[in-house]
Image 1 (cartoon, one colour):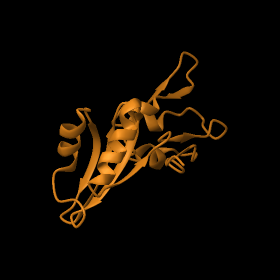
Image 2: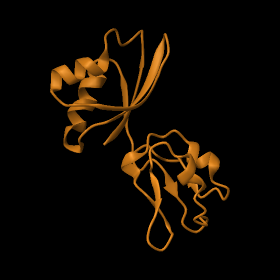
Image 3: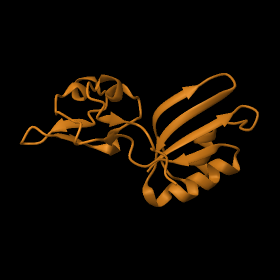
Image 4: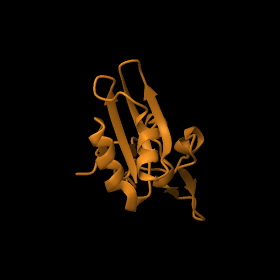
Amino acid sequence: MKLMVSFTRKKVHEPIIARVVKDTGVLINVERARIEPTEGDVLIDVPDESAPIICERMRSLGATVEPLGDAIRHDRDECVDCGACVSVCPQEVFSFDEDWKLVLDQSRCVLCGRCTQACPHGALSMENTRRA
């Protein structure tokens, strides 16, 4: 499961990911990170069954954690299977099936947004990625 972890230096005073890995024993895959002197956002991927304990521990250390649903929304009616997204995606989220129809592997997405910018028909979006 993908989790967006946000924190500020005022609330989090130690290496939060290292602390959570050490405390829980769960390996965390960092897929994307933006760290500034006063705050940061990290997109992590953890095993689905471990997500609740990871969320709880991160929150107890002062971070905000939001579980994410599907990263990219694909409007099949708007898509013309042009492949613009295939060429710009650094994670190989997009490919073609045997009928040359676009297919997505959501598990590979790191929410960089390059595909949504490249799509000439607006068939891709990152709206509503956060789970309720």
